[in-house]
Every structure is written in structure tokens, then in C-alpha cells.
Amino acid sequence: MDTKTTTEKTGENADAAATAEAAAPVEEKAAIALDKQDAEQAKEQDAERETEPAAALADADADEAEDGDEDDELLAEAAAPSSAGIGGAAAAVVSAALGAVALTGTWTGKVVSERETLLGQIKTSGSGTPAQQISEIYGDAWHSTALVNGVFALIALLVAVLVLVLPGRPAWVRSVAVAGAVLGGLGLLLSVGTYFDLFLSLPTAGS
Image (cartoon, rainbow, N blue to C red; front, side):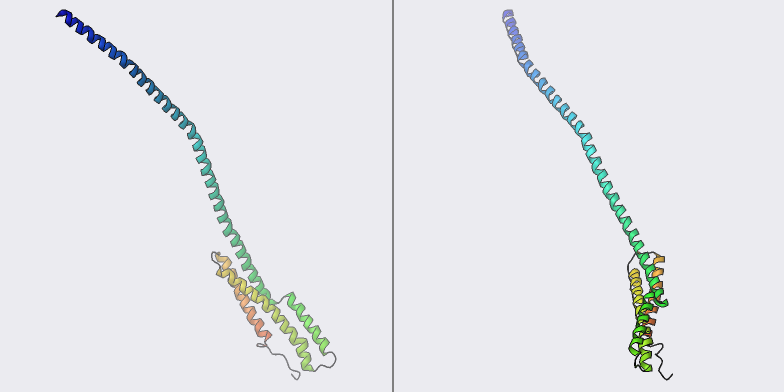
């Protein structure tokens, strides 16, 4: 009985040793596989760490480019109203000046008037009646002056109306434009009345 028991124990010990020897390579393989996985994970983490700064720089460059585009757009938007405001102010001043010139007379109107006077003298120098002399020498000259002043008044009125119609004008620009419109309208009214002899008719030869 003792011999059998000893033999059985010896066989069990041998089987356990063989099992342990067989299991040892499996554990070593598992450990090697785990080491490989850890090494691959470490490499991936290192690669991610290396790519993160480059991605951050790219994002920063993109943000800076977007900020630059936004700044350019803001500057363009700020410059557009300023240029439009300058143009509107200049147009308002021009309309007021033209309206004043239409009321007081212009050098162009004076030249045209003198030309008509000279032509009237030439036409009636030989055998012109007093009525013809009055019409050719004085009437045509007055009508020509009224026509030139009326053109200036009409331009002043149109420019003033254009400034008033466009939105976003400062108060003082609109005030100057209103003054130009009033002067232009008044000059146009006087010019039309003078051209058609509504206010003062031509004198007759017997008066």
C-alpha cells in the first residue's frame, strides 16, 4: 500500500511539473503579447502627442486667418459709410452753392446775354423797328440769362433731392441739402417766370 501511494504521489508530482512546464511558455507568450500591446499603445500616444502641437498650430493659424478676414470686413464696412458720408456732404454743399448761383447769376449767363445782345444789334443795325430792337437786343439777352440760371437751379434741386432721398445722412448734411433744394426751387421758379415774361413783360416802343 505504501509503495502504491508513493508511486501515485510521484506520478501526480510529475504530471503537475509537466503541466507547470507547459503553462510557463503560455504565460510568457501572454506577457510578451501584453508588452507588445503596451509598446504599441505608447507609440500611438507619442504619435498623438507629436501631432497635437501641429494641429494646434494649424488651428491657431486658421483662427488668425479668420480674425484677419473679419477685421478686413469690419474696416471695409467702416470705410464705406465714411466715404458715402463725405460724398453726401459734398453733394449737399454743391447743391446749396448752385442754388445761390442760380439766384445771383453766373459768368456763363453774362457771356450768353452779351452774345445775344451783340447778335440783336447786328440784326437790327440796318432797318430794324423799335419793337424788333427791343426784342432782339434786350429780350433775347434776358431770356438767355434766365435759361442759364434755370439750368443751374434745376441741377441744384436735383442734387439736393438726391442727397435727401439717400438714407444714413447726418443731420447737418440734410440741413444743407434742404437749403440747396429751397434755393434751387426758388431760382428755378424765378428763371421760368423771367423766361416767359410772367413777372416783367418787355417794354413796348411807345412806352
